[in-house]
Image 1 (cartoon, helix red, strand yellow):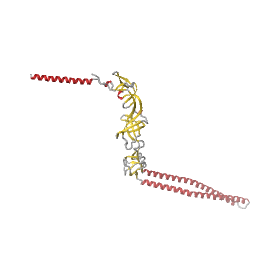
Image 2 (tube, one colour; image 1 turned 60 degrees about the vertical axis):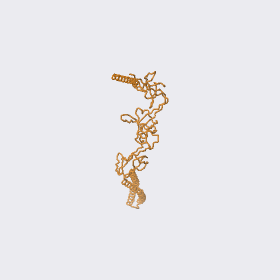
Image 3 (cartoon, one colour; image 1 turned 90 degrees about the horizontal axis):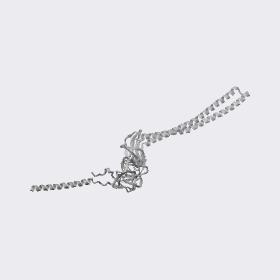
Image 4 (tube, rainbow, N blue to C red; image 1 turned 180 degrees about the horizontal axis):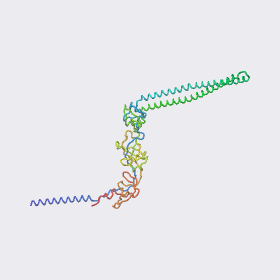
Length: 411
């Protein structure tokens, strides 16, 4: 009797557990298979501001980063620059050895003095020689005039038989000699004048050549002193004091100077969005170093040539920084850029998740009398939350945020 009573108790406990487990299982199955109401949203009107997002890099503006090099070869005698130093335009950065260049300057100066002395002597002596030649011409002209009178008197006396034929011939011979001397004197004068003019031009050209040689020597000497072409900060130093640099087709770089007050952001915009971006549009960006701070800017230019990164076509949109950023931004910082496009005010919108693509068309599922109906729509701008509806929906209609195939059904 005791064993039978114990068996009945165990059977009762077993039946009770089975009934309880079955009830719990059926409850979970019923809850799991119950049709869930789809999430929905109303078609409403609001202002829609479209934004293009892009990743960019902080870069120096054109002309704000300069590689300073040497135009001549030589040994670096002094190097005054160090990384991080602030320099001003015209400040001396480095000096090459100058002994041979200074010697060339002295040699050029001596050559100029010699050429100027030669020109000065020429201008002093040649006019005296010309005057002497002019005096010779005058002297022989007077002799010729006198001999002509002698010939006339000799002819008169010869006609009266006062002198012999020999005396007349001698007088005529004398005038021929004097006329020949006069011609020689005139030629000598012409040569003296022409020679003076030619020698003066040559001497003046030698002076100009000496001046050019001296100027070139001074310019070469100036190349030995390397100065900063812009205001900025020393970004890198490529040459050390004591090294010998050789200037060839590419000038050896001493330092790189960056003007940190002239920075910009190169934003790489996807080719899908680049048609919407225009110069003058406002933009904001953040950098990893200051994630909670937004820097304002505007689109200044768009490079026409594409930038291909990992087979993705992007275009470089240059963002001019309009905020103060001194001491905050540095070149090569990664920037997250938002470019604000035009604002469409009081337009019909639905959440982004409500619009689906079906066979190349934009569609939504409209909730009508408890049933979902597929409807084709035309869309316009969109932002991170909503999409502009151009046609296909009316204000106040309800759309599903999930297509029917994503919603669980009863088995």
